[in-house]
Image (cartoon, rainbow, N blue to C red; front, side):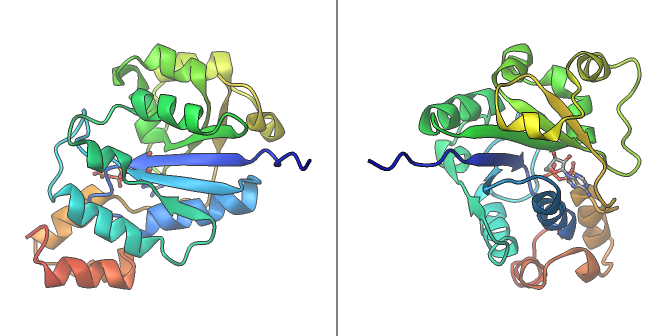
Length: 213
Ligand code: ATP
């Protein structure tokens, strides 16, 4: 009998309000640096930390369109379907149960990681999975933060080790991409052109539906 090969799967959550070229480029870049078999992109339904500007359905539509040509990426709409606050730990528990034969690694930017101690049940969360933190321009992890302490304790420089176990944190200096959703929303609001930061179809969706005006 053929035993199915274990896969190495990345999980990339976000509000994607809107999804931008930074998001798609970091994932493409990540595939070049880490031998991931697949990345699951999960737009938050109702994020606990920040208000969203457009509906979950609009954000899901934009995310689906942005990643449609990126190989080995699947969009998972579970948090949007749930209609209640999206806690990373609940999603992670479900994904672990669904992928018992596979290794999971959580992917996030250094800004998100810096605030990890505000995540619901964060101490349990970090014990359950390995994490890749992508250093974002102008977002170094503050020295006095819980995130920094956590990094000092659980930091690994061995990227091969991310494919097993949990509680390891790998800091990845990817090609920096200075784009954020906040900046894009502000620019749209000021009537500025944001096409250089967005995938063409996402830009069209935003214009057609008058989003972020
Ligand atoms: P906002 O400006 O609204 O906070 P954002 O641009 O950070 O939005 P999110 O949807 O919050 O976008 O990001 C999802 C994940 O992608 C987070 O972990 C975030 O840190 C990471 N991320 C977003 N943009 C970049 C970027 N340019 N470089 C590295 N990581 C990024």
